[in-house]
Length: 140
Image (cartoon, rainbow, N blue to C red):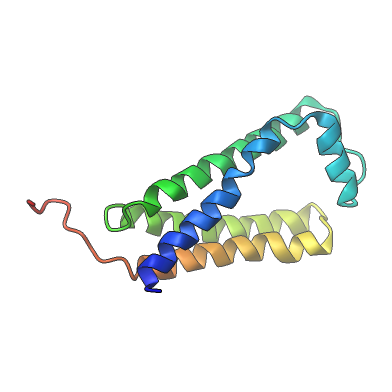
């Protein structure tokens, strides 16, 4: 498989997983609380801000997944966007790592979420180097 084809399918795979977060936007509080408790995090607060943050974050992940699908359809055209997404995804992973440690999340969360997101960003950046440049002003 060529590096370009790998990047295309990598973006679509990450995008597909991210799109699954859309389901969490519509989860009832009882389901979110069960998941929260199942992760060993205790009872989920019933304050409106908690539901807002959980649902809006899930919606954002779904939006991100759709964007990854969009750019994977024409990598030469969207190369600058792929570079940007790689950079901000890498940065997001670093931020998540700090947040996870600061908030005292369980070890499995600390050691997986931030590093995994940083890895995804790094793969995007590596893959963006393999995208042939396209002169957007060239006439066909």
